[in-house]
Length: 149
Image (tube, rainbow, N blue to C red; front, side, top):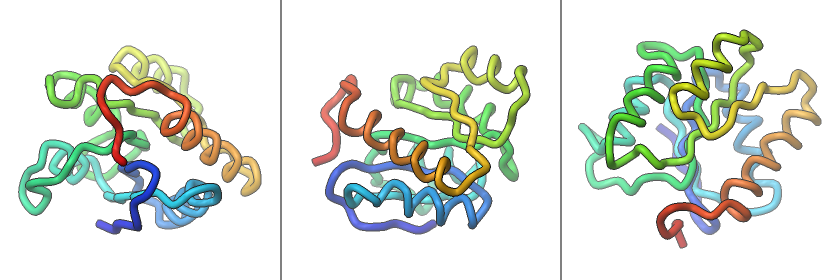
């Protein structure tokens, strides 16, 4: 688990590719410094979100960026479990994935994803897409609870 400084919101990034982690953090921090917690598999994502094990006492993030293809537990299963819990049922979850499978899109929305974003192949497009996600979900979107100061 890696955590960066906090000023404008807190994002949980669930991603197993270190290259994608590095690009995503760089893109999100272009306009503002965020607290970004990174976990590399679905099981650790659930432990973090439900405050289990070493993650006890943590606060929920303002946004979850969730890959579909993860070790231990798929992003789709993580999403289903989040939506079954009153503590996390309203937590904004964006599926950020390379999958272009129509069934993944449909399962994501049926499972309660707030958005489905395919990772662009080009570096410039990827950075812009992630930057826009951060701006929308942390600055423009009205959360159902107070956001992190």
